[in-house]
Image: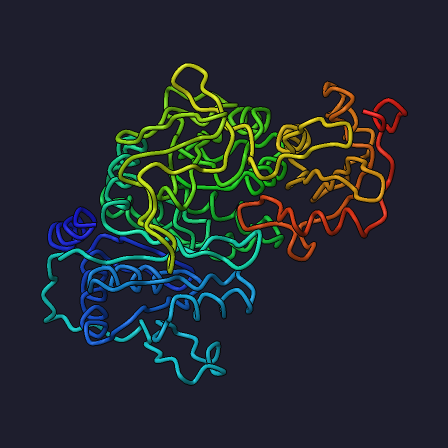
Length: 478
């Protein structure tokens, strides 16, 4: 993280009045950002233990993250999109004693917590200190099975990831990054805070656009891209599909030069549709346990269907089809667990096409039919997810009769005959025979990046009525 703070100090001296970050409330220059970070870091110096960030986003979040890092503390975001029970688990599991928040009412039921407001006015006499190292951050996974687990990351992981991604994105001071994904997510911390600081680029944070990830109207996201005219951004496939659908034949802002998409599989047809209307989408792949990104398509070398070459400094191999990663971005370990091995088995299946990695799906999501057929649900889901009206989908097996059932999450009407057409090239044994249509407001079904919570999907498949899909005796028997 030294490169981040060296860059912040340099910008605060050479470009003191240029805008570094902008959110829905205001703006902050490089010099004011450095002063606020140093001022809050001095307050945090005297605080012991793990410190939580209880902020939804914005400039205050940026200041809190940087100040906690500068003061060498262990920090843990409390994601606004986690349930109350999940955040209660995070507070207990991480032994959080202090929370940086501007909303103390959110923690009124927890009087034992010390609360620190990040909005205190900075002192202009604060000299910005060099980064001494040693800070850690705990990123909690979404907890698709059981409670979320805390991934512990430090300077080694973050420095390697920042350096590798800097070479891929090649940002500079002329860039403007539009931050859409929540800052509590590691990938947006790297791409929306650290990389722009290293490059000297401006970041614009639009929380109403972030809300579009959770089923809110898409118009604030459209407006954010039109009014800020960014050069870079980071999206999840579900929100990319909604953006493409909303634009129709209208072109995306011509200011864009690099839009990364990750967190879930993107169909090649969706990426192609985005590129046709001027969205320069580049798919990548990664996971928190490997500091967010493992592979990424590059500008000028972009291949829909693959997630690109492996990042510099990492090694990826395949063991029985499973993606295995080694290198400096592999996490220190799970909180309260054993240190991570040097070689990390991701649980994802994949293969290589030349030097490009292709992700085939989750190993633990593999479905086994009554006839003994193995089906990767992503293989089926990707076909319907290519329709921009469809935010996400989930394939599962109904316990009562062993039928393959498909849940489709759509933001506009999609007919069952259209879905049958999308699936028509699949072998009979992989074609679902039951359909559930729903929308993004379905409680608990989708994670923020748009991937389905498969435990919730399984419950819906086994409790909700379905409509038939191209059911034939052969498909049921197979």
